[in-house]
Structures are given as structure tokens and as C-alpha cells.
Length: 276
Length: 289
Image (cartoon, rainbow over all chains, first blue to last red; front, side, top):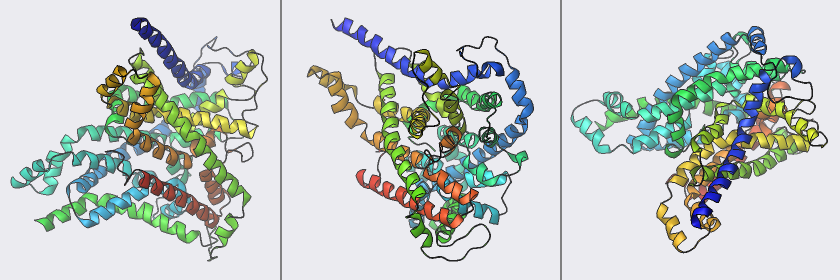
């Protein structure tokens, strides 16, 4: 009886799981399949689910129309440089907040928490003024420098270093290393899981970021991928042939990262408990 | 020794401190100042509370404020319930093929907000979208997904639930796995049903994670902008224009920086109030313990 009951449950729940999963997969699948159809088939009813004559012509069209290499280089440059700097800054800052006990550090930690309450989206205009004043307008540095600061990254490292026993630190101090050496030689290497997780997050935030490039950039030569996509979707008459294939192209780097680092990404929920 | 350490501590936080002052404290101060002026990008003069007074009489502001509330009010439960439902299925001993399903649910995390907007716009196109095609195929009339405000709002909600589930699912799975099995075994001995087990064991056990998910979801929805801009561009009319887009359009397109800054301050106060409430309910924000 219970065995039969178990089997019925298994069939029902697995079916439910895969119906929902199909609903989640569908939007991406439909975009992908549509992007493989010749432009003339996109709007002619009846729609075919699978392309009758799959073609890559949309991709060569968007590769020729959009200067993707330029946008990819810009975005990769911003994403990689920011990620390296974010990891270093967040690691040192999180370490200081976890292992030193000064009143001003506590105050600073509250300041960092406050940044989550007033995200850049909310103060776009004043931020734009600051960017202008600092001479960062229309430069990739203007995308990189402000994005180095992330409460999530600092928080992740702080949590991690708090779990590292103080004895380890005391022992290293006995051996006479100065604080900088202890941090870079001893503490940073043991924080490798957090480094990898934050690096993946940071890359995703920067690759998919829209707000900062929107505020900072104006020269099309400096466009990032998202801003370039926005220029297609914001047009009065959307060129869907161009938009569908361009959107798929923009996903490629993130898909690659996911394939390589899947294990680290999927484990984050249970360990870090935060998102950007 | 202690003094030397203090120097090191300062050195360690220096980058973040400098960035905090430059890109948070400074713009925040500018924002407060602008909100009391009629700054338009060139000249500014002090106008006192005029912006705030005008703001609270401006129906287009009220409308976008109310829509943002409604969006958060409907979107947050939608996100929470969907992610929890998926997570429960993914940790259930009764489901097969979990790993593949988990990857599928996680895919939206890789997709940028702009592309999320594109995906849903393409699917829900009125004359060319797949959804209306299927509706017509089974004999229905095409639904005005983009020309009717209510339907457009509905599509925005779908897209929201789609894009925000991935990460919350990971959080919930982490919490669900951590619940001791013995609790369920004890309930089974006492003859508890599946629903009772969920209600009396699962839900109370994941409360801290639930708070975290709600907090993050509220913040993300209150500041939603890129996805909606790509999906509906705030339309039809202004029916899906939320607060951040309203601020962007008044501040950058119409160059009414002072006025937009006043709206920013209102949004900031709302986020602050919500954080404090959350802080109070979680007894000091110790959601991770």
C-alpha cells in the first residue's frame, strides 16, 4: 500500500516538477528557436515551433550590423578589471571588519550596510553629477571604479573570516609576521571558495549591468553589450531579426561561465545567502 | 602593536572607504541638496520645499508610486511562493531528474534584465507572439498584452517571477536541506499528513531564510527598471512606469534634476522604513543565525 502510494507520489511530483521546468525553459528556448528562423518566417502565421529551414543568417546579419567585438571587448574589460579589484577590496575590507575590533570599524560597517538601502538606481542624477565632477564621464573607468564597492562582497568575506579561529591569527602574529603578510600569505588563500563565488557574482553583475553604463557612457564606441541591446529594443520600430540573434549572442559568455563554474554557483545558496 | 594594527585595519578598508565617500555619501548629499533646488543641469536656485509640495500634488508621481507598491505587493508573494514550491519539489524524495531541473530553473540568473524584457516581449507580442498564437489556435481571441495596461502589468509580473526565482531557489534549498530529518520522522510516527508536515515543520524551520528572501525581493522590486524598460518601456502610456523609471525620465529626459531628486528621497525613505521594519521583526536583523 505505502509502496504504491510512493510510486503515485513520485509520478505526480516529478510531472509537476517538469511542467514547471518546461515553463521556465520555454522563453529561452523560444528565443533560440526563433533566432534560427529566416526573418520572413518570424511573423507569418501559422507559427512553427521548430524552424523549418534553420539558418544562421540572422547571426551573420547581427554580427555585421552590430559591432559586437567592440562591445564584447569593452564589457569583458570592465567585467574582468572590476572583478579583480572587487575581490581584493572586499577581501581586505571584510577581513578588517571580522578580525579587528575598533569602534570606527563598527561605524564603517553600518555605513556599508546603508549602501544597500540607497542603491545607485535611486540616486542616478546626483551620481551623474559626481561622475561629471570626477572627470569619469564617458569612460570605462567610470564604470569600473564605482562598481568596486559592494556590500554583498564585503559581507561574504566578513562572514567567512569570522568563522576562521582567532588562534590561527594569534599564532601567526607570534611568528612575527606583520598584518599585511599574514593576510596575503595566510588568510587570503584559505578564503578561496569565497573568492571564486564573489568573482562569479561580480562578473555576472558587470556583464548584465545596465544602470552604470546608462549613466556613464554616451560614445557608441564605448558601449557595453547591454547598452547596445537597449539601443535595438528602444527603437521605435524594433528590428526583431536583429534583436533575437543579438540577445542570444549576448548570453554566450554567461553560459560558458556557468558551464565551467556550475558547481561553485549552485553551492552558493547554502553558504553565502546573499545576492547583488 | 595595537596602534600598528589599527593602521593596518585602516589600510584594509581604505579602498572601500574612499569609494563609499565618493560614490555614496557624496551623491547622497547632492541628492538631498538638489531636492531643495530647481537644478536643471545648468543653473540651480534654492526653492525650499517647492519640489516636495509639487510632488505630492502630482498625479503622475502618485500613479507610479502606487504602481510600484502594487508591483511589490503582488510580485513578492509570487516570487516567494514560486521559488519555495520549486525548492520543495527539488528536495522531495519523490522527484526524479533533479539536477537537470535545477539547472533549468537557474538559467534565468544568467540572463540580463534587458534580455529578460526582450524574451517576454517576444513571447507576448500581440500580433506575432507565441502566446496569442496558441490562444487563437484553441479558439480564443488574441489578448491585448501590450496595449492594455492590466495585461501589460500581468506580463511584467510573470517576467519578474521568472527572473527572480533562480537565486531564491538556491537559498530555500539550502534551508530545506538543513532541517533535521528526525522532525519529519517524528511527525510520521504521529500520523501527520504531508501538508501538516509542511505547515508545522518546514515553514517554521525556514523562517530566517524566508525573511531574507522577502527582504531581497522587496528591494529588487522597488528599484526595478531595466527589465520593464525593455519589456514595455513603461507603457502602454505610463501603465507600467515604476518609480525608478519615473525618476530617470524626469531627471535625465526632462532634465528636472531637482524634482527627480525629491522623488528619489521619497523612494529612499520608503526603503529605509521597510528596512527598519524588517530589522525590528527579525530582532536585530540576525537573519542568518
